[in-house]
Image 1 (cartoon, rainbow, N blue to C red):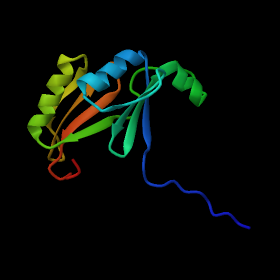
Image 2 (image 1 turned 180 degrees about the vertical axis):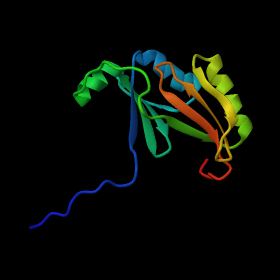
Image 3 (image 1 turned 135 degrees about the vertical axis):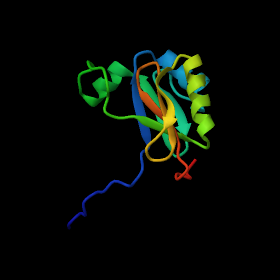
Length: 139
């Protein structure tokens, strides 16, 4: 019997961020970004984000789980993105994050693709783009 090759379905179930201080990171995502936190054990925090969940897990334990060294810093080669409904919401969310422990990496500005975008870093340095895109109705 020939088994057909397995293929991935087009979805991401979890995005797990390795964090240096689980309590601080959990408070930032729950209290500052106001993401709905799900009941979890004390070793991990889960946040529902539509059909994808965001997980926060201690950096060293996540590296251990993946079987890779925990050492490393700087640009991680990816960003997370959050689209909003208006240009004004970009600046408002960036200001809110800055007032509550996030670091503004790039203030909101007009993008070459016709929208408006800015970036912040969470307390562990993960980059988030906040964008208004008039051609992207999925908000």
